[in-house]
Length: 93
Image 1 (cartoon, rainbow, N blue to C red):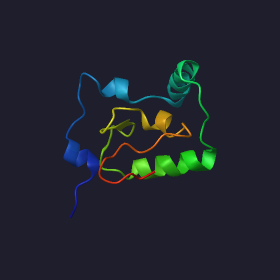
Image 2: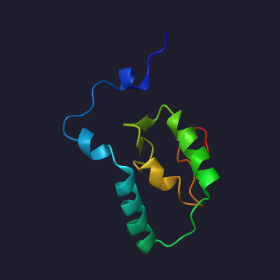
Image 3: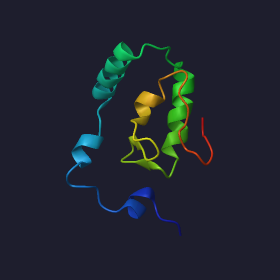
């Protein structure tokens, strides 16, 4: 029987567990701040949803929010039209 991601990652880090669980309103704030500095088009809702679905099944998604390859919040990266999956093995999107 295979282990779940939580079982293979062990207990959350006491020092950072609270800071990596980002509420949706904070994701929106981070995205808006990023776009002020780096204006660009956003992906449509269907593309964003497909990207987030791919990330949700990735073994390299940590804390349900963060990409182990680049350290980004996947909810932010998925919204950027020209972004791509940073997994060097096989890009999911």
